[in-house]
Length: 245
Image 1: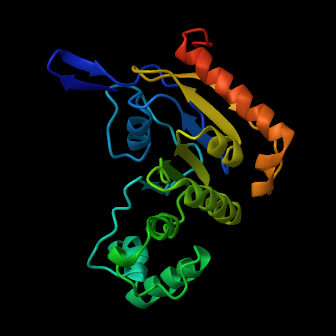
Image 2: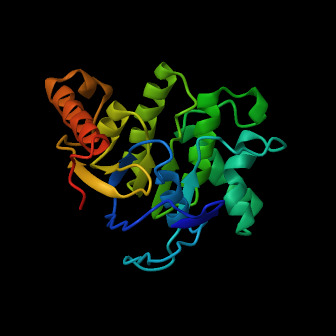
């Protein structure tokens, strides 16, 4: 992917070679500005790549949904109305759309807040609404762009656990951008390490832990070893000594 710049063209991504598998949870981790979010927008069909192709092998219709760090909730809609919005856009009957949205209100732990306005929600609550709004579409691919980056550490840990529990109930394919090593290890089946711009996947780490997982996994020696291994991979890439496949 290249963008126009004052100096000609800015190469943001090069030679991205990536397969995503059904019901896989994968994380992208790497330096800020290395093109991770750009890749998500290409996969979401928001941006068209300068060159290259994206192939969907498991048939149509293929629904993609993306959740950004900023919640992007409509301030004039209530919680349940924000969640129902994708169905209403598709002309689903309003009563049915609100019924399904009500189910998602309960799934993401917002019962009692369905008629609240976004301005009255905490950051964690607003992000739950954004995630529910994405998942109500039953996407084959869920793209998460640093969804918990604006949250405090404790809320972020709790939201990671809630996301994992929700994902394990729907088992869609997920590609998530994060800058948190422990978050990536806790959530992922596979972690993809990006090099600095132009962005490129230069390392992969498969996570060995069985599912379902709990927060107690963070306290185990195996988790500590895996986070150390990932940190070493990131340092190798940063220092130019990693695999540059």
